[in-house]
Length: 400
Ligand code: TYD
Ligand code: MG
Image (cartoon, rainbow, N blue to C red):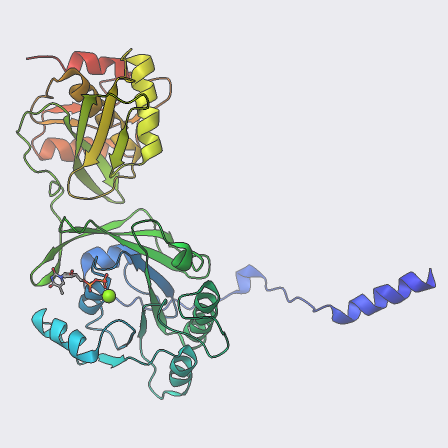
């Protein structure tokens, strides 16, 4: 008994008291958002940067991360740390892009402790600190090489501390590679306030900015850009991803989806060809692979089509990714059209999520897409309003 009491007393010594703050007494310091002036970027951020916010900007090398930041930060007081480019290279690019450099300072010094010390002691703190990239900086307190998980975590922790203490917005650039080597930057996702991904294929000029996490905004919004000679241009046309709306080809369908507050139209292309393989090919780009598998199962069951003798390729035009479930109906239409070798008629758009039972489900804010479709000149608009089951696809796609 006496022994137990002693243990209890000992434990009490190591215990730290917690403090409770009644939430209704908390005062929120509503700081001004810092707008970049690039509408597509600001919308994804949630109307600009929040002072002290830490962001992780990921993307494949060459997709345009540095270009995007150079263009977006020209009006903000920025320190740019680069382990990738020399000041001459950056200046040369900025001049080509006609970017004002009055607010930019640049450094190739990559020791994080030196960087944080500079911010701590600087009389005038920057509004923005860019680390390009988090894989190239290092801390004196970690032995492992730059880019290793230990270094990434230590450096990020030190930079986050600086961001919060001095209300400096910190942007960490993280490279990810095609073969999914995201282990590095991925380990930082839970530490930062906002995770932005800049997507696009090297072969296409379109770039999409998406956020997968945002403590200061919605994760629904996307920003669309086109990489041109003079840098990134904002894209506002909802039909920008459509090549030719009036071309009749089997396997092509157009889908309408919501991306945040805006409506967008994408072209799905499917190619179904007889296979010689016992395990037929399923090659999918631009939509989730498992989603296509699921839709193929729905087709097999509800449209009674034999799919095992076909190799099937599915692609979205423009090198972009569709994440909305409202594309389901159009993907099925495109698959059916290719399997039957019948083109879908002109000015047709599909809007709808498909369930496992073959039912077409009403999508979130479907009316908005229908309204936009009409405005843009589509006259065959298929959604849960006029098609309740995927079986009806058979009546829609008929040889003319
Ligand atoms: P960059 O911003 O350096 O990519 P990241 O920082 O993501 O590695 O962009 C490099 C690519 O962008 C390069 O392949 C060339 C292209 N680009 C243009 O097409 N036009 C331009 O005006 C600029 C600056 C770059
Ligand atoms: Mg770069």
